[in-house]
Image (cartoon, rainbow, N blue to C red; front, side):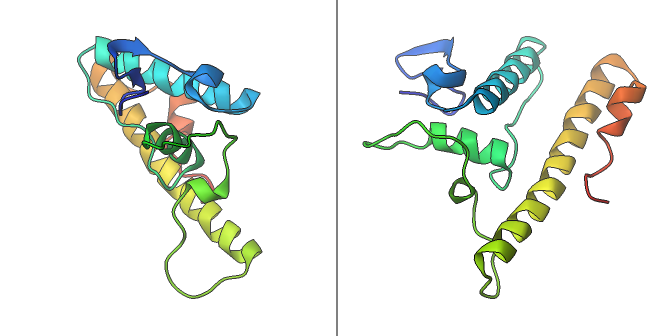
Length: 138
């Protein structure tokens, strides 16, 4: 039902977020609304916006909503929504830890890009925005 921008295929420009879009849970619904709000705010200002990388839980959630599926089921965010870490065979705990570490690094880089695009638009980052520039875990 949704296109790649989380708009209705039958009504471009009508966006869906939260539970009505197919996510489950309060946190997932709020995150979906936040991302869609960021996307629309960028669009209104004529700026490009890309959703978070598929390697992050936010990106995995958006991927779940965007991917055509005849048997679509609303869902909470799960590790199965993000790509596996390539390389040697890992046990479940180590695999989740590797996915989490990669997600934090990729999310940090994505957030830095969002902050930089705001810098170009409104000037130097405020103190709160500067904290987003550091990649979590470093």
